[in-house]
Amino acid sequence: MATITALEPEPRSGGVRVRVDGTPFATVGVQDIAALGLAEGRELDEATTAGLSARAEVFGARTVALRMLAARAFPTRELKFRLQRKGHAKEAAEAAVAALADTGLLDDAEFARHYARTRVRQKRVGPARLVADLRRMGVEEREARRAVDDALAADGVDTVTLVREAAARKLRSLESFAPAERGRRLRAWLLRRGFAAADVIAVVKEALKR
Image 1: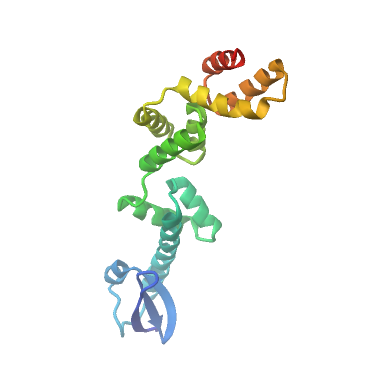
Image 2 (image 1 turned 90 degrees about the horizontal axis):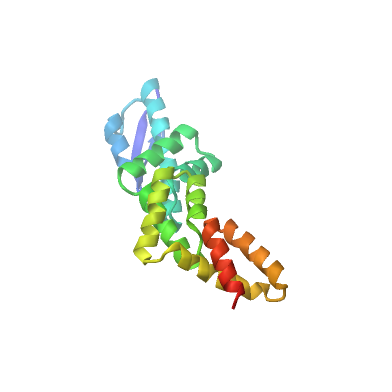
């Protein structure tokens, strides 16, 4: 029967490397060592070996997820997808993401609020487009709409103002077109940005009169 010959701290991941019969077998979290009752000299039966392997898969996925989150924020569904694309099993990815959510390191509501506020400030994107983008990333619709409403309220910006600002920027690139074509292109562009049709029509008429 295989025997644990060493439990070694692994500073880079913050985990513990388990050596079995002198060979590195798996790296898991400190809590996993306690949960499985692992110790040097312990012989591993089949059930414990399987449990150790499963926890190592989750720990590996969690380590990768933490590195990704250090670079930028992710919603839970997108993070699961990216972990699986990197080769982690679906079950391990889901368990790792659930653990991060339980500790507060992953929060879809906070992600949605940050995403919406950033896009409103920097990109001048309309509410419908923001909600659609968040939904596409896996944020629930109610959460997405709340985040967009909060973003607009936080900046004290109404949607008509956003349309005007976006239209003013876009018009600079349409100066070479005749008025009718300029209006058509501007309307289409603003609608694709997620602004309400009524606001777009009013702002385009207003802009072309100048």
